[in-house]
Length: 298
Image (cartoon, rainbow, N blue to C red; front, side, top):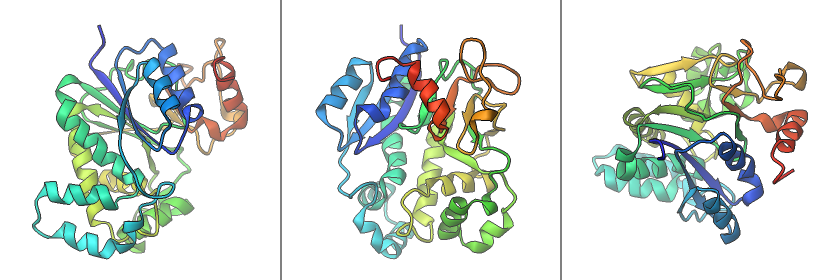
């Protein structure tokens, strides 16, 4: 009988090869929950393969080229509209038309969980193209709340070019300076019980609507994600340091920092296999090792 866990991810303008490591590694773990893929500009062959592997496909239309929405150029107007006393339904309808795809995915997840959340106890929000699984992603039995996964300790908000860009556009340069020494948390993997994730998604969307400028950046949802944690907007937040977490975020790591056990699994600093690897593809040697363990796409 399937368990009551669900993974939500988004695939835009991509084919099966982009998401195969995630899907095939997940299947290998014996995971029995649901995998839901929100798909835009994804060909029929890719959708068919995903369904064969047990994924639920939720199609959506995104008119922008790549991941940008042309209407976002009028952000000052939309920001004003989001600030007035329009209904939440009206605001969300507009947001679907003006948010870049990386922001819009939170609307898609919120809509899906409002309709289907009663079927699930725990939720994982995951990037599609740079996540692989070494064990059932819920095998660590996360407690209720929203679980924030930190990046490496040296990835500090004020010392990372991208975080400075994202957060200064959204909240101003002074805000970045006040939090310059904080370690960044990664929005590519987030866990929580269904009620907490619904609260997180609602808070993400409300904060995106208030952002100073979304026209200049298409991938700054991580800035919003960090803001929620820094401002303590979610009372039941749990923070996990990298290398001691159920997710290992590997974007700035080197191959000589990766530890493997006798079974070829990546382990944390205590020697335990890590259920989820994020940004593993930034390390060419590790990517080759991971793909070699998935013969279907080797």
